[in-house]
Each structure stands twice: as C-alpha cells, then as structure tokens.
Amino acid sequence: MNTPITGAGDAMAPAAAGKAARKQAPRSAIGVWNPETRGHDALETILAQNAIRDTALLPIRHGRMAASPWTYYRGAAAVMAADLASAPHTDLQVQLCGDAHVLNFGMWRSPERNLLFDLRDFDETLPGPFEWDVKRFLTSLVILAESNGLTSEVAREAVRRGYQGYREWISTYASWPELDIWYDNVDVTQLAEYLAPDDEHRVEEQIEKRADKRSQRGALKKFTQLVDGTRQIIEDPPYRTHALSEYAEQLDTIVTQYRESIADHIAHLWSRYDLVDAVQQVVGVGSVGMRVFLTLSEERRTGDALFLQVKQAGPSVYEQFLGPSRYSTHGARVVQGQRLIQASTDMFVGWTSIDGMDYYVRQFRDGKVIPDGAVIAPRLPAFAEACGHVLARAHARSGDAAQIDGYLGAAPRVADAFTDFAFAYAEQNSRDHAQLADAVAAGTVPAAPGWP
Image (cartoon, rainbow, N blue to C red):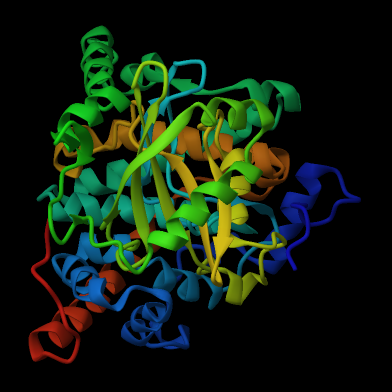
C-alpha cells in the first residue's frame, strides 16, 4: 500500500536529497522518449479500461477520443501512465494530480466564496514522482497548441513558460515555512495579472461574470423545468437522461451513505435538503462510461436548489506501477487527494461505496469556470505560466519543495530536456490517436460521433 508521502533520502538535507535523486533519474534523461521500451500497446491499454464502465456509453467515449489528438490525450491518462513508468524516474514523491493537462486547471468558488484558480480533476490522484505531473502538463501544451493551429514557436514558448512558472515557484516555496505554503492560493486577481498584466481589471471582471453565471442558481435556470408543479432536470439524451431504473436503489443508498463521509456541520446543512430528481450524465472524455449522476435537492424552507454530482471512482491509472492506494475506497482516495492538493476544497465533497462500486460526491458548478482551449489559445504561454505556479503549489503542499528544487537545479538544460520530452511525446500521442482512429474507421472499435 502507498505510505504517507516522503521524499528520497529523508535523513539528508532536502537540497542534498534532491541532488542525490539525479543518480537514480539523471536530468539528461528527462528529455528522452523511447517508444521501443514502452512495453504495452496503447489501444489495448485504452480498451482494458472499459471493464468497469457502462458498456452502453463506450461508443461515446471512443468517438470523443478518436475526434482529435487533443481529445485522445484527454482520455489517455492510462497510456501515458504506463509510458512514464517505463522510463527512469525520481523517488521525489508528491500527491500527483495524475491528469494535470492544461484544461484540468480552472476556477471555482471556495467555501468562503472567493474565486480561486487551481487544479480541478483528481480521478487519478496518487502519491508518485513529481516529474510525472510536470511532463503530462507540459506535453498537453504542445498538443493543445497544435490542435488550435498555433505555431511550433508559440507551443515552445508555452512549454517554456509553463516550466518557468513551476520552476520559479518551487524555488520560492522551498524557502517558505510550511504554514505559508498551505495558506497560499492563486485568486482571480493573480490569474488576470498573468493573462493580461496591462488590462487585468477587465479580464478579472469577465471571469467574475462567467463564474456568476456558472452557479447553483444559474444551473437551476439552465438545467431544470417545472413539470406538473415539480422541478425536474431537463433531459438531453444520451448525455443526460432519467433512464435510472437499474441504478435507482443504488443512488438512494449512495446519497444516504454519503452523509457518513462529510463533517458533522456539513451533514447538518445537508439534512435540510430533500432529493427531488436525478439523471445519469455523460461527462468529459476519459470519464465517459463511468457511472455519473446529477442530483437536484431542494432546501425545505425556501426551495433553494443544490446540485450534487455523484461520480464513480475506479483505480488510479498509476496504481499498477506505484502500488495500490492506502485508502480503502477509490472515492476516499480521490477526495483525500483533492484536499491535499487544492488550496481550498468544496465543502460538500465526500464518498461512498455500494455493490462493489466506489463513488465520490461534489457540488455541480458553483462558480466553476472551465477553460476552453480555443479561448485560451491566444494567451496560452501566459496561461501556462499560471498553471505552472499552481502545480508547484500543489507539489509543495504534498511533497518537499526543497528536494524538488535541489533536483532541478538552475541549469537551462533541464528546461530544454522537459521541452524535448513534451514535443517528442506529443508526436507519440498523435501516432496513438491514429491507431484508435484507424480502429474506429475499420469498425473494430465501436464509436459514436465524436462530440458533444
């Protein structure tokens, strides 16, 4: 089982321990990608994940992944996990996000109602080598740039600035007391300063307006209707449907048991709501096929709405290489990892299990602003630097920033190596995507139209 996160050489001074890790994983090897040593077939790895998924939804998953190299990358965390594990890596452990691609950074309201910028997806979270998150993040910048028609020069600048944001803030956190690291966050003002230093107030205002629309009450207007005096979630088959007959009993038990995983004061708040409707959802790319439910509850006194998303949690794609999670359920693994990584976490997150399936629960929307690739493309280098900052903070909270700082050092060739890897693996991702697309075209892998 995974043990609590520690770094290599705990008896050494942190910087010395980081430098010692260079023997196990030379920095010169960071930039090397050798497809001959990957030890698995990418398509087989993708299809092996279908075993725990709803078979009726698998054609949607395959279609979305086959749509482009970018959508493939979003769904292929398992492929990259196997590839990262095939090469030398450090023992400098952090709580991995596990899927730190550039669109898995976003904004939402903290419990104090502040709008924060942070990592937002934790389905694959697990303790592991810090550089695995960094490599997945930097590679995503190349693939997103290419998918939006940006030049290789812009893609290279985005990778450089993404690494720069990570490197500079890891060095900064290495000198900070632990409490200061844990109290730190990146708010909407700081993000606006990254994106438009000469016009940050206008950008901040635009983000705030979008967050206000993506609220619980905004969701009530967009996703519900009155049917015979009762509020119901609007269907959008096959992406949102009331066809829950086979899960109805499970869902009732899930909602009941969820109360046991949340703090008493949140359970007290939750007790003032009644569940009035639920639908099955299709979300994302990599998550398609996992059981996901959107529930609508109403507060008894005023009828105010609360949407919660209930999502199936399977094993992290890293567990076969790093060992099983130390938590008894994957729902707990996801939520506890999220709490460790994020500066401030949704107060409603919790978990439960039933009939051999694990689930976690979170608020739906609540100010969540998810970046759109086409929208951020014109500012991709600046956005990448902000993401690098956030990733460094997550790693500093869960690992030892001084050890990572010692390992990376000041040599420019380390930035070169990460950049070389990002471009080399982006090419591998294109080849893997073509393999899936060919299988879909040949009819050997069933697929529905790629989007929405």
